[in-house]
Image (cartoon, rainbow, N blue to C red; front, side):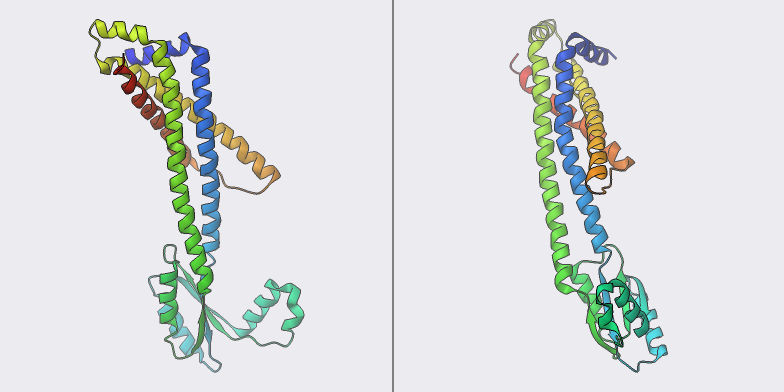
Length: 281
């Protein structure tokens, strides 16, 4: 437990430097946390929009109930399909009046065709899969037309891919910046104790023995900075919810991942900085 004790002694010897280190780490992780919160809410919004992806097959007039029921059973058994429902002309008209209430007078005396409404399972809403399912549904002889908003689905999927790639790239960039900042803070500690480290090496201390307290110090600073950053992100999320828009916050798993990530970044920053400067001392 000596390395832990040495790390805690360093905190007590230079409380101001340790405080500045933790706050610097916290603000770098705070920026990363804010970006992660934006990415999470963007992904949640896209998922909610994606849930509305559906295929609508319009049924020809005069189709029997038996034919529709058999088709519903077949379509519902497709591995990509979550559910398939029959929408009668009366239901279609009522839905149109409800969803487009400002144009309710247009639907007076109107007749809308019956249709089969198909919802797809998560993971099967990409343009290629949706088009393939729509094509299979179109093979039924009583289906006049099949619509699924091909252009809209394509743009939604493209937006999701762009958001994922941008999130990964910016996330890696923020993580690298955090590692650099943590490395710089540990470097100040190493330089402040350069003479002490030189004496330790002269009396036979190994690099591993010298390095361990700094790694533990980086770990502790990463954890403390992560906790402080999480609190700041929570406050920012509360203010956004109160004055701007409703957002979702990190769940327990993401919070744990964030704290572990902060600790890992602290270790990496310490490892890089200490390894570089031990070669110079």
